Image (cartoon, rainbow, N blue to C red; front, side):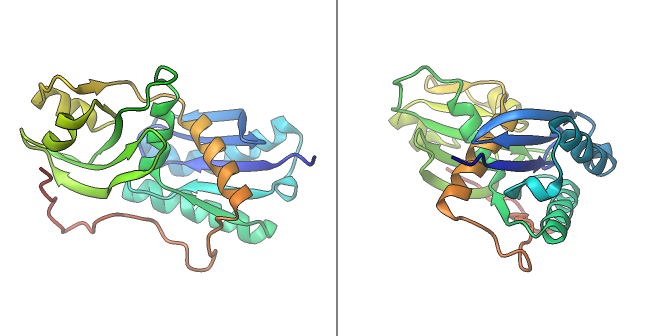
Length: 230
């Protein structure tokens, strides 16, 4: 069986990375924890990653990128880089939802066998606003990605049904407001592993993007007010 190698890129949040997936597992990763330096970080990090692995862009099977929602600048930078490499190396492009990647990473931290729960990743969108979505344990979408302004009774219906796990840069604001017995909070870890695993799955399933028309998923323009979610 031929190995599948996918270069994964994510600068959608304050913690960016480039990773190399080998058959769905993360074989190498380089992190950037300074959001203002993501643009300068990407190209040298990708070159170093491939050099360490002893391969070139032509040896890759695909390029995967976290496509949003998230930082407007981060999304533009990562997608532009991924598209340029995919075009130059004649490789397919894979677009991954930032929120679903987060949910995937959250799931790996949960006890085995506990599937009666919801996963609600949150990305800070400033003030009391967040980008979020809700998934079940199997990553089926329960609530589509959206932006909304946090309030005391948010997620009440979901929290009444089963435990809801929250994580991400926007979760701390919600933790300070929320006191529901079914609310659970966890650190966001393992995004590089989730990116490699999901990119591999998408590649196997043929879920490839149209390189010419791929655009960042901003979720909302700058001027749109956040929505309330009850």
